[in-house]
Amino acid sequence: MEEKKLFLPIGRNLSYSFPNHPFSYERVEKTFEILESKKILERKNIIMEKIEILPEDILYFFHEKEHINFVKKMSEEGEGYLDFGDTPVYKGVFEDALAVVSASLIATEKVWKNEAECAFNIIGGLHHAFKNRSAGFCVFNDVCVVISYLLEKFKVKRILYVDIDAHHGDGVFYSFYSNPKVWIADIHQINIFPGTGFEWETGEGEAEGTKLNILVDAGAGDKELLKGMKKIVEFGEMAKPEIILMQVGADGIRGDPLTQLKYSLEGHLKAVKIIYQLAKNLCNGKFVAFGGGGYNINNVSNAWTNLIDFLSSQQSDGSP
View 1 (cartoon, rainbow, N blue to C red):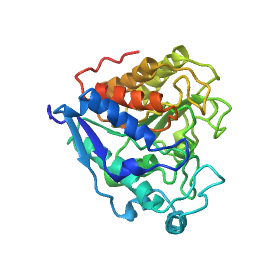
View 2: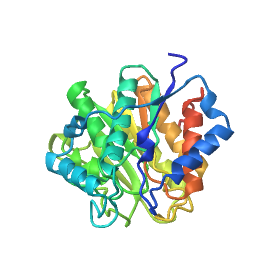
View 3: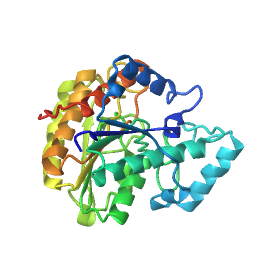
View 4: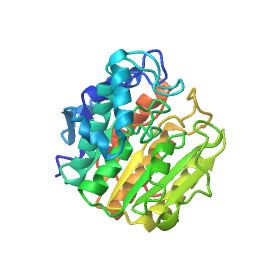
């Protein structure tokens, strides 16, 4: 176990990218350039494994058949959009999107079965897709497939999902809004895409109180982020999860072209450390991270590098 700390899936999941688009492969290229220059990937406690694409049946844990078939058809044609203009089609997008879901599922299973202490799918956290539609650069929702898989296959009783992407993770939040087993905390910028995620939305029915939205204004920085993380820790302690999933979107870092937040790289990493420590305290360290957004190449590549550096080190001090 000492030698198997961080599982880092690579392979076709890293090819999920759109041409001439903010969600570009450059983010991955730059990240690996930095990781290699710092020799971080040479650490023995990183399991960097090329994953195989799983059968498309895994998509049925969450997505509807009509949507899966629609994406497959559009992928074969290779042109058009999967939504109203944010998520373009290219030949092979179906397979690339399936690879992302596969990587997230394999990574989570590694952690759940104690084959790795934690995991990070760099190209994951596609939190805008719903059961029946793509949205906001997200073809399929790997997080929702993972959550559904944990609930159905492993009968997990409590899951905590934390999302620090600047955009509200609407696809995850509303898909499990009435499920009391799924606790969701989402801190995001107000009045940007998708325009959802209000403080009064706390779950419904038996799930009342299991959902938390924290809204921050344009211009918010580390102070507001870390104040929000303190609330999330208190919320997480009530959740008593068996595993923690975290979408670590870097688009809240100062200088992102699609948001107006001003987190620092250090503040972003501190937020991740806090939730990692929460996993240590509450669920034997079972922690899975998903890369999420981030459209300033330098910001996102450095944020991902920082995260891999931390998760593959012996550091665990992230108390708020």
